[in-house]
Image 1: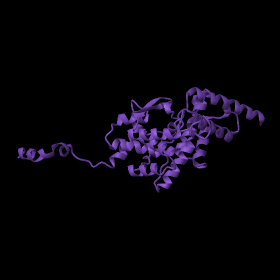
Image 2 (image 1 turned 30 degrees about the vertical axis):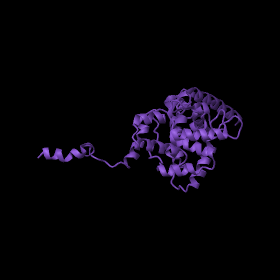
Image 3 (image 1 turned 180 degrees about the horizontal axis):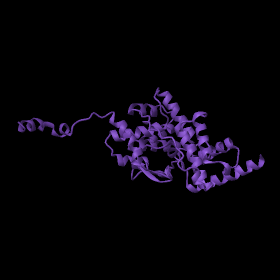
Length: 295
């Protein structure tokens, strides 16, 4: 039994190395690693003896016994596939194994009034500035808490997001109103490095603390609609399109690799747009004259 555990640990260490070499985010590395640990525990045998049919049986077990969601099942599928193709150098074992289709759901979006109510309900100026920034620039919570004071570019009215999702830096839009509020926040709290410092000296606010601050504000605002702090980002994207911004411009601000990801907000925006013929829009007062000339 001890020998089996030692062998398993050796493979897990190699897997951890391969995930880091791939450049996955720490969160993805941890998710894949824990998923593989569960995979090993299920078989309790050396990976060399695990066959393609055994992998299919395991995934089937996750569906019908564990009742995992399609997204969690996709993570398990990906973690196992990467292990056998990279760490084990046995890509044939995971080739053509079916994977659940990704379910596309429309994101949770708040109205502008609901967003403002949430921001106003923050318990202190720090949380208010944080929530306002999350909405006004469409930031992910991980990007929000990892901002530094030096990332605020006042001259260009942009914010630098360092090493965002996918390991890429990008610039996002900066609200003039939010900048004024941030200046007031800075005068009160005087952050020197991290824009939103945490309790621990020299560390930023944790994502959990940011989510907690949002939940308190949302509850105080009396908002019962579904949606976590990420809904502020969804609301930013939807409202940007509603106020006339272009889809490719929005893609750049959100940091989406594929335009298909950004297009989901078009479906939401369409619900609030009354379709009009361009003839009605541009003809204006000339409509009667145009009609008269057609007689």
